[in-house]
Length: 159
Image (cartoon, rainbow, N blue to C red):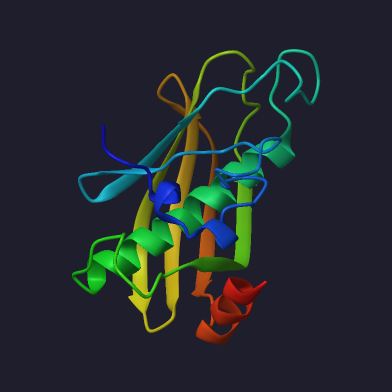
């Protein structure tokens, strides 16, 4: 099976609550290319609740955020013609997150998060995201992600 974008993150950058594979209490989302789009399927748990029967909006924002930064990393590698396991690592952080909640998101079925890369320019990547349930979009967002500076990566590698 294809590795998720997040599986390529260096160990010291794999503790994010939303996408860190090494955060045992986190969401540990997994994102993949599907043609020119990216996709993440996430199964919310019974405690990801806002009101009975509906997903908490903060979870929705977290999924859009972390899928956006993962998509940004994958897009940057793709733009440079590099594989995601090549050095130096390209890792992105959120500079801006905008979320529109279009309708309540039912709790129960898996959530599908889809990303489209709008812009790759220097150290910045812009991604538009939709989140839906059973084919119906319930939220949309826009993530502006910036590449983590090399000096911070070096500092974290020493920690």
